[in-house]
Length: 138
Image 1: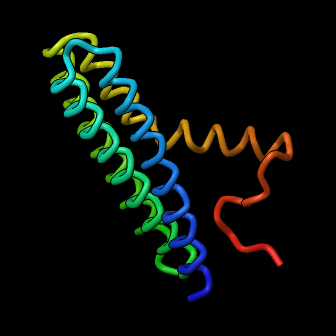
Image 2: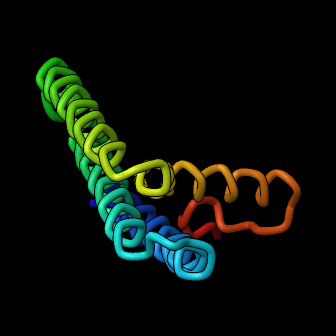
């Protein structure tokens, strides 16, 4: 139970920060783009895919920590990973049909969780923040 609450805290932590990233990227799309509707849709789809991938990974890790069958969990993780690659590939190819702006918006959305993790790691390494990825430290 304790491990599950830690994982839920981590998921909430990153969802909040990805939403902030999404809002900033949305403002940038509105200011600097002539293809606003396409970029907004592409960015939204990319961020939703990124958050879905993160939530699925959190769920698989939760099952691994709870003592489930390790071989089954690894097999499910591989299938989910391959399915994620197919979904991302289809999304990127579809976005390329609409042009470079849509491609960059989808790419930014898909990589949004990784951007947030990278920014958080850098700020923690320099001592700017002490959030330990959403865990409560006593």
